[in-house]
Image (cartoon, rainbow, N blue to C red; front, top):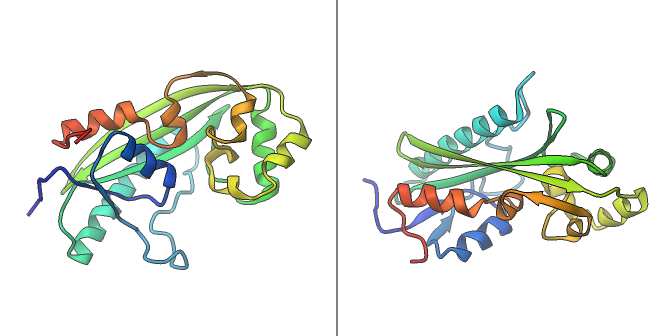
Length: 207
C-alpha cells in the first residue's frame, strides 16, 4: 500500500541534494541503493554509443527510479515516493560525468576553460510503476583557467566526485563569467523543477 503522509525517499548519497531538499522543507528519508560502497554499482552509468546527453540523463534517472522502487520492495520498506537525480556536464556533444582519475579531471577542466558548456540535471519521482521526469538545462561560461589553477583546484581530490570535475559552490565559482539557468540545477537538484514534480505528486513543500 502506498503511504501518503507527505514523505519521500531520496535515493542519493549527495550531501548537496540533501541540503537542497531541506531548503524547501521536504520531509525525506535517505534510500541507499547499496548498503556499502564495496558492493557493485546498481546502475551502469556508461553512455551508450552515439547517445545524446539528454537521452543519457533521461535513461539514467529512469533506471535509477526503477532500481530505487525495487529496493523498497525487496527490503519491505514503507512505500513512499522515491526521488532520484542525475547530473552531467556537456560540451560539443560530449558527456562529462564524474572523472575517473586526476588526469581525466584535468582534461575536463582544460576543455571547459574559456568556453560555454551546459549542465543537465534530470530528476524523477517514482510511485509504483508511474515515473515522472523533469530536466533542467543551464549554460555556464568559464573564463580561461590556467593549468596551475586547475591543479590547485583538484589538489584535495574532492572534485573527482563531481560531474565535470567542478562544484559551482566551490572554488569554480571564481571561474564563472556567466550562468544562464538554474544555480541549484548545477549543484545537482534544480529546485524549481523539483518543487513542481513534488507538488504534482501530492507532496507539499515548505511543510
